[in-house]
Picture 1: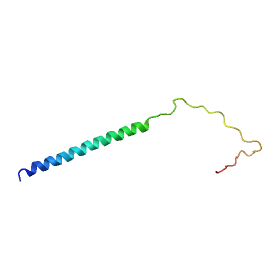
Picture 2 (picture 1 turned 45 degrees about the horizontal axis):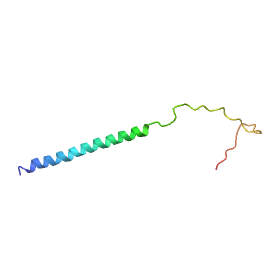
Picture 3 (picture 1 turned 120 degrees about the vertical axis):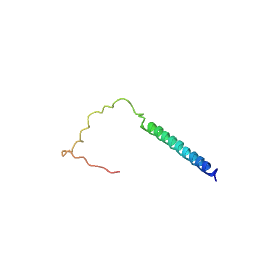
Picture 4 (picture 1 turned 90 degrees about the vertical axis):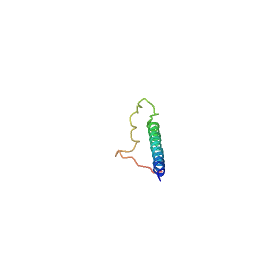
Amino acid sequence: MPNEMPQTFARRARHSSKAIVTAIVLTLAALIALTIAARDNGPKSVKTFGPVTSAPVGVESGLLPVIHR
């Protein structure tokens, strides 16, 4: 009976330390994934757009038909 208590404690300590190490590894993996996902690979310059094209000839109301495809 005297040996049972230290063995139980040692087993619980091993399981506890494994859980802590696993939690740290998962946290680091999540931080790395967030860093990769947040990386901006887009162009660094700002695109300039030309003026909006005018309505086709024959449209006086200013409303254009919408064509659904």
